[in-house]
Image (tube, rainbow, N blue to C red):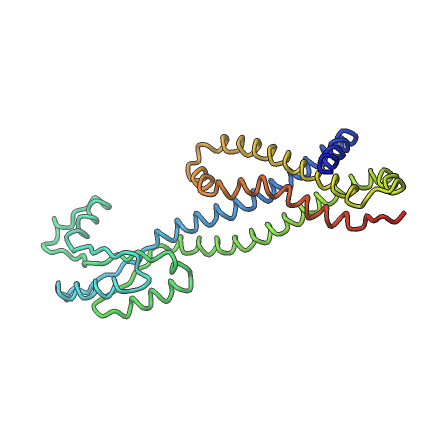
Length: 287
């Protein structure tokens, strides 16, 4: 019986080549839309994570704080749950950095070093969000011995807010794309069923079972889904070669290789199966 189902599906493909090709094209478009929506979300998450990992806060120490006081402040900072790492910059190191960055040696004019020692606290990625950052800066400002807390990552701060907002819109766009994909597949399968309606009526008259009518249509669609997966993989491989110069994008694609392969080869057949079951529910043995 299984052989009959596959034979009937193959006969259907040969007798309705245009409809079969149309179903492959619509499935390919649908899968590619879903795939690129997924990858766009992952790219935004990757860059948001990269930006968050670079967020630092500078804490300038009061001039009258001795080495023991500096050690106490260091211990306090290292125990903060939002601290990923803490780096101490001595007055001498601060002077060297200033000279290297500006090219001006104030030591030729001044007989003392006016630059304060400081700590550079790298914020843990989990806390690098707008609300948490405001609370972190206020918390650090309350530490005894700290003269000033400076947050110089204002651009990254704003950029993270934009990315968080964009992710919401991307999620909405992904849902819309999914609905469009479902409609494309539904419209194509509905067209195939309508084109074979007379054939179905004939099969009913000769006493065919309902499974004999429906299962070949589903197999037909699943085969179209598999073909669309191969076509999608070919097109996506070409796309990967075109963006070969963008190392970050290639790294992201390699990180999610299993996920995008599942989308390519599972989404098409799954869409067909869901839509076929929904569309064929109206087909009955009634004449």
